[in-house]
Image 1 (cartoon, rainbow, N blue to C red):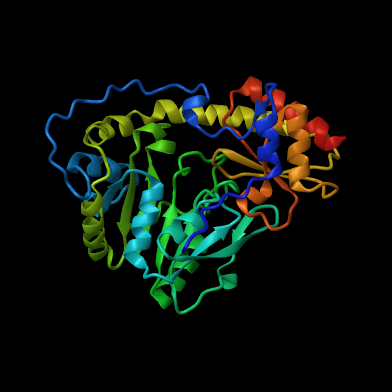
Image 2 (cartoon, rainbow, N blue to C red; image 1 turned 135 degrees about the horizontal axis):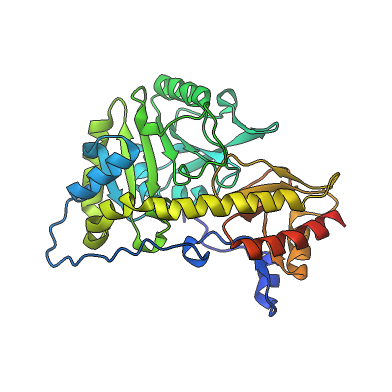
Length: 367
């Protein structure tokens, strides 16, 4: 088999399954469960089925207006994960390689393996902020693309203009594509003029931007994502993606019909999320005592925060101790942190629950 379908159960999962009493869930990342406002848009009826492989023109136009690209270079998908799968089908043969960031959301290993592709991790460096070092990328003759996540999940680091230019030069030198996951791009923690724009705003390298309604509008249940292409070869790439899309026709008509209204109304949800994130970031900062043995690795954006914790216990031991005290967090190894001294928490929970959980977390980590 090209993928191991067995799940390795960990001690935290077993402890969570045994737990009967309530706890503060600082891993919550589902916006539909976080007490955030809904857009209140009714889905239209769709009595006729007239599929367009890339997506209905009005939906592609709305996505292009959001990204700033061309509707002719937009392909709709049922999710960002499906977008990755289609790009791996487009760019890779079985056994080819894709460079993926580490630490990052634990998805790339599965998505690549299911397409018969090998994920080759490249490390992100922390020195007060996260950096992508193109000189440290490990690649081979079978490398076909490099994936960046901007801002990263869970690091929250945006791709910088200097990093993007270096990646573009490397991709053009070796014939790779640049795949940029931008699902959290609308949620910066502060302004930074160094940040790269959406990958589709450049024309110097074959690039694909991925995003969707799950994070842009807080509607993961509607299942609408997209790929936007730019750069040399983009038109041919989209033509081939259209064939892949036509093979699956996975996106439902009703969500495509309402996509323009959803994207036009996204400000209501996004403003509420930004306010929530700012409140919870401030709460986390206030809960950390002076000279605390733990620290916050400042996030530039997104919905997560990374904590550096003492090495006196393993990440799993810290997570178990916190759960015993009534707080659920992710150990860093869930996201492939290499050093074994990190915890990851979501900034999305309601502020009262978040503040309660952070108070317990600070007490446990500082004891």
